[in-house]
Image (cartoon, rainbow, N blue to C red; front, side, top):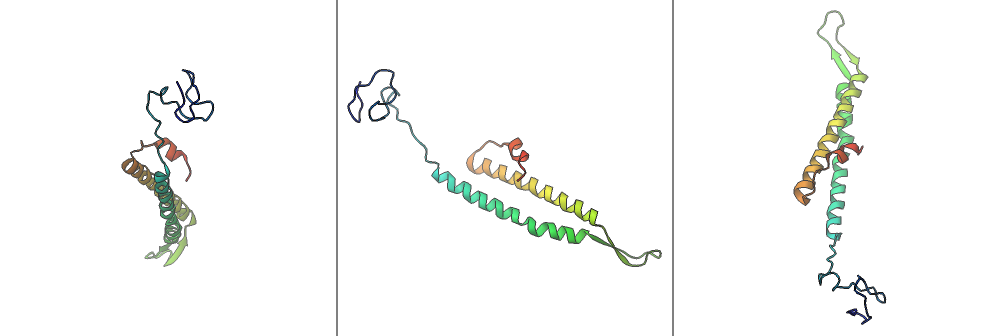
Length: 133
C-alpha cells in the first residue's frame, strides 16, 4: 500500500503517511473524514448572545420601576394616622429581588426553548439553572 499524495510505502496498520501526513483512505475503508464547518453556527451563537444580553439589559429599567413603585405606601383614609406616606424599603427590596429572579428564570426558559427549536439541542436544565447569569 502506498500514499496517494507522496507515494511513500505505508504499512497496513498506519492511518497516516509518515512522510507527508496524508490520511490513509484504504485504512479508513475509503471513506474520507468530513470535517463540519462550525463557522456558520458560530455567528448564530454570537448573535444569540448579543440578543440575550440586550434582553437582560431591560432589567436596568424594570428593577428601578419596581423599586420606586413599592418603596413607599400612602396610608390615608384613616382617622388615626391621617394621610401620609410610609417608607417600606424592605418590601421594595424583596419585590425587586423577586422580579429579578422571575426575569432570569423566564430568560433561561426562553433560551433553552429557542436552542431546542432552532438547533435541536437537548435541553440542559441543570446546567442552565446552575449558572448565575
